[in-house]
Amino acid sequence: TPSSPTISPPVGKSGPGTCFINWLRVALGLSIKNLVAIRGNHDVWCYDWFEHGRTPILWTEQGGKATMEGYVRTGKLVDRFHKEFWKDQVDYYIDEENRLFIHGGWDYMEGFPRGAMLSVNAGSIAKECHWDRSLLMGAKSAFGNKMARNGKFKALEEFKEIYIGHTAENDGPNQYGNLWNLDTGSGWHGKLTIMDVDTKEFWQSDFATLLYPDERGRG
Image (cartoon, rainbow, N blue to C red; front, side, top):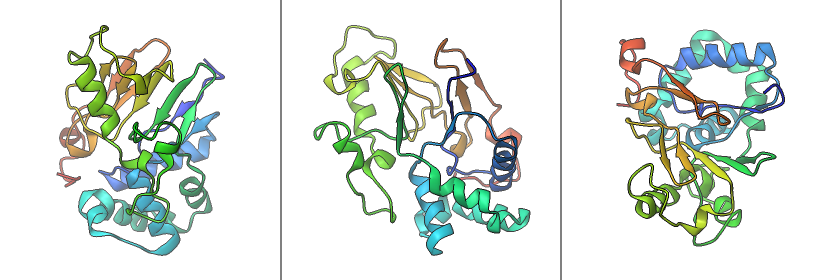
């Protein structure tokens, strides 16, 4: 619907750096209404590069090098709209229907939101919500079969639905109870997925290796 937010992909997870930067340029240029950009671990690294010039090897070897080279090629490194984009991302978003959008998850032993906002030693603004995989693992353990409805995982019960990324599952998008994992491995030569969360209809790109055969990506 026109009033629904457009949730951005985990955009720092590059991949074909120039292609992402061109997408971001279009998104910023069109002033997409109700855009909510969710911060992930790669976005933290990109933020730190913009703000502090930091280039940890874990990032540069997993797409960061392509991102930096893409910014150099396009000349967008000094574009204020791009700088503002990396600054203005949010760690999570809860809509009016109590659906949670978050990159990784949270330490469910600590509860939400405390377990999402715990600091992590992986960047100047890194938090558990950017890195957590325990929520997905707990949901998979509780529900077993992706479409099972008879499982129980208390950590998920606070929200109507939860949408995450961060952990690639090439056969997705996958559902575990009321949790959806939309990461289908585009950074690892898989596909990029976008979903209408109202209808659960989704669309996928071709495999990244077919779209960008000359890009090394993260693999």
